[in-house]
Length: 340
Length: 300
Image 1 (cartoon, chains in turn purple, blue):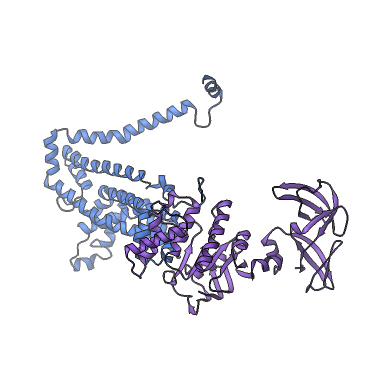
Image 2 (cartoon, helix red, strand yellow):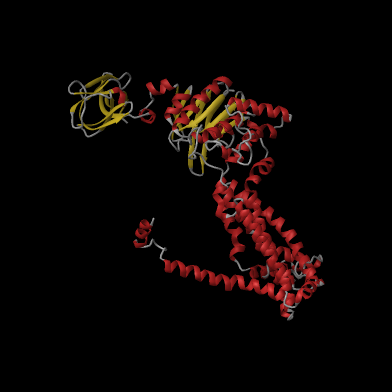
């Protein structure tokens, strides 16, 4: 089911949570809403679900205008951040709930068979008689997903689905959610503030800031061609260098990089720690190493440039660098934006 | 083993751990409990049976006493269900909806806790009494509210209005709206959501509130005494009847009637403790809250 948001607006009291968001989500797509807290991502998700009503604009499911359809008739599966499993029901009863309250009458045997199928799908066979308090957080989240899928939703909506789990469980569930999505092909929209999660999981990422869309694109597009400095900084560690552009060539200290489409004048360059290097001499930005941080996957240097800006760069774990060393930071790649 | 103990005994005690303070506090509380709480209860038991079991039974089976018991039961049977429904509705409205005046409603519900019951009684006199607001209209239509069962029920309703709501509101606030939203997203109607999801999760707290409400309805004296008119064998509830007998110097009868109220109190206490074990009551509140994420012993 294709979802279309057309200039959707939502205001809480005086807080403008969502300010005119338009977005097309293709049928079968897996899309992430990514943004810092307060960017309106959860509000958008809740409006798509029908848990909040939009103050303005339209939400369409396929050709149907769903803007004013209440949540119980909208046919969405919603997975809550804290699972919202019914604590007084067993896992099986939780999953069966939607089928039991449905207008479409199903026999007890039919429901039981479907519950068993879903338990198999979420790999929780044999746990149907447990209560939510008796299973782990990761298992609870899978029950929540099975419960949402039980009603054959047109759209699956997940609100920070893995936010409350620890890192390892999160990574496993992420892979698993992608598999389930590919298997069922259901249009899925999920909210996260975790960049890695959005990039790993989604076909397309919608980056939000202050209730507005900043950029929509595939993980590759938003990573390689960030629309502005906010996206660049939000998606990962970024170092800032002042730059000057002249004839689409940016000068950053002694380094020169192509800056296609950027007007002449002052500019801001941003570079990832991995796109930087450190050498005793060469073309780049003069800096002094202030600290060396050793990490499992490499060595990170914290350098201070002559203008007093801190720069973080990643080098090989055996790079012979010590704190206090002087040299230049070389730039393999950088994003250049006109000065704000 | 002796060394650590020596070490610890030489250390200055932590705040509040001084043995003298500890003992003094415990003894003070014990003395107050015995004289203020336990002794009067014991006196009730002793006095009720002071003239023998037969006198006790006679006092209890006296028609006026039986009528008073009946009045009390009928009042409770009407007032408790009404206030239970009111409490659920109020708690639901306050915790699940946003509307202007929500906080004000919260305060209004608690008024009966802070106001003397006698004031409530007098207020009802002014509203429904012969000289009161609706007095003429009521007497013209021959509707009797004061000095009759409706007045007693109304006064009891006023006094016990907050009990159920007060138990439910903090719990339902802590539970949030996630469960109801989940039920709605799965297609459940409002009623279905209430009976299948909301109610089962608050049932012990609800029962706890009902028990407290019931105890108060049966024991209420002040407000009821103003509006009932103390007509023996007609509008006397059990607490009023105790006072009446006492003023008639029928000590044994008064204590016999009082022993029924005390017995009710003991039953209430047991039920209350049993419910608290199941997680109701403020003390055990966190046990009720749907477990949030990220527990310690989690494996995927």
